Image (cartoon, rainbow, N blue to C red; front, side, top):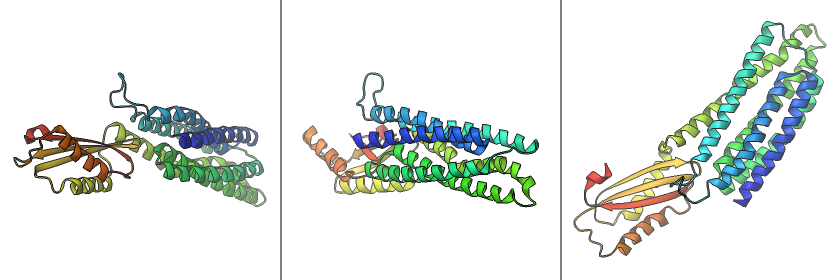
Length: 300
């Protein structure tokens, strides 16, 4: 938990720095593309502050308000982040189309290049750090955060290249095209990143709505459970699961045959322990419930 919080604090600090740089350079240079990047960083700053709170919240035990814990807050936050990114992108897209219709907008490409190079270096470094932390800790929050930083870095590289092209065009007979560079760049950047907020929203909604995890995860869970109970006299077994944030909820419903006659509840607990042991080391973190019945109607 402490490692995750430390990584999130790094993201908070860098988002604030990048937001200040983006909004400042965007205003001075007149570039909507840089302003867009600044607004994305500002969204990232605000959401990172909330993320720190959520990262602590999801590890809290159940209480009288949330009997199954707070895991659902994690995909909910990621969904909100995706919706905000999509909203800003739509607003910038409309503004850029309007600018093209009106003849483009004047910008200072030199300042744009300076900003883009600084942003490129900062985003790639932070993205790499967050990605390593996400894999080490197993944090979906850091995984989404690292993707955002790496994509921001890629976009900053594109901005630097395009403004470099604008400087060259300004010294040729194609100088009349320079005012269109910035609005066209905004449209290209939005189209390039559009899949990210859409995917983030889709994945967040799947977890909020309690969808089953990916087929590969389901197959591995069932393989482990079957390996743990394969020698038991069972009439049937049903494994149901859903992924919520960093947790995987697994419900095993075991329909016992007449030969299955444990003498005490302690013996049933031994079966539960066998299944729990089989799930050790699996990511995302599994929360396993195992129930027993003689009548299959209770599994419907």
